Amino acid sequence: MPTSNDMRKVLDIQDKNIVFEDNCVVQGHFKGKECKYIKGTLTYIPKECMKCHAPNVNYSVYRNGTQKSRITIPMSGVKPTYLLLKKQRFQCKECGATFTAKTPVVKENCFISHYVKANILNLASTAQSVKDISFQANVSSATTQRFINEEAKKYKPHYLQLPKHLSFDEFKYANSTLAFEYIDADKGTIIDILPSRDSRTIKDHFLNRFGLMARKKVQTITVDMNAGYISFIPELFPNAKIIIDRFHLVQLVNRSMNRTRVSIMNQFHTSNGEDMKKYRRLKRYWKKILKKASQLSYTKYKSYSMFGMRLESAIVDEMLGYDTLLKNTNEV
Image (cartoon, rainbow, N blue to C red):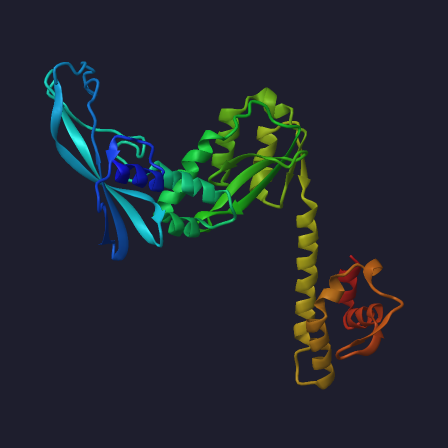
């Protein structure tokens, strides 16, 4: 018994029906890796048959051999650790059914202990990738993701109403798939996440989950420039005004300015020395052209490569003077 007590303490096992003998730890190999096996036996006297629930009177439920299970448990030391558990089998005289002894260490017909699952959820609360968590827990990435998803469903809030101001967005997750999320724009909290951003998935979600009265209360929806969202919003939210996120507006302006600059810059990519000087200046100082005029320095001289000692505003004016289209685009 001292060995059993010590091993249960080391492995955090509280089930006293699991017994460990002396020299129960052996070295071995599994899936091409060195590992550690801990041998144990699970046995007890059942109070009733697990199938017909007939009470165990005068050994009406008797022992009927054993069944071995390899259960993944948290790593002990530096090697993957497995519990080789010999489970007692029973047979009922009343119904003739057989069943196996159960333990709170592991779910029935499962070979990954609850301790490993708890460790996965604990690691998932930190900033780690699924791959890193899987390596530490000694399970596959798919298993890790499944446990996280199953636990997340338990804490998923169920909203009956929608806030007045929503925000739509998408993000990449497994295999670079784009998922859809909608957010309370006032509080910044995520209301729900859908596995796909296609119109059918989003429309079915809102139509099946929220009634027309709830959707009519939505006043504004902030989106990016995804035309798909804009096409179905009036149908789902009759009273909502569509707001284009200002970040995407600024991003669009910057991209347009850069396209114009690159187009004109490439025109100066010639064998002429003066043209190449303009080409290199436009290529090197592209960020200066994107700055607002009010943010440029008009008083402090500084040495700039290919310009010499100049004002920041002066070099921007000179570059914009290379082409009328570049200057007009910058002003717009």
